[in-house]
Image (cartoon, rainbow, N blue to C red; front, side):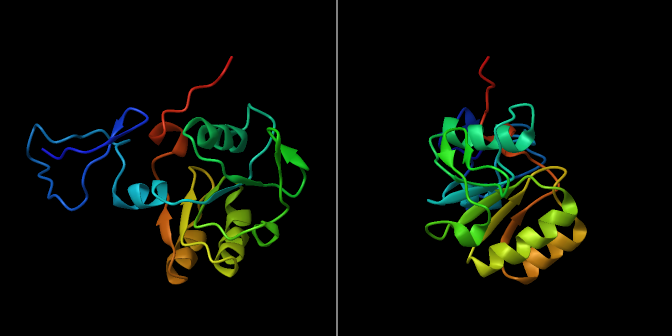
Length: 165
């Protein structure tokens, strides 16, 4: 069985160790991070495109989840001056420094433009949160050489986000 570190209560498997899907001792948790997720989480700089202040919205929750997990991302939102007490930026090109990885919580059509902006900003990892992805955005990001996470796990689940009441 693979063993590894724990990130917010989620077992992190060593991606270099082979796994045996027929082994009943192997983890089958679909929220357990895989290699692209582990590479994303290992990045040192992040932005959340679609971050906001309305805690009923997923962009706001994803931003809060970064903070809860000890990461301080740049919030990207062209309609907000601040997000949860942090200076917001209208676009990735307006960030004070390049980031390695972004989470995207925008409508699928907007995500397609975010992919182009991310490529121009030198982003290497992109996590399209459920509902933000489109086939075109995923294909284009891969074509541009980005590591893409889409169609599955949510940052909130992987990092063990807990809403504050």
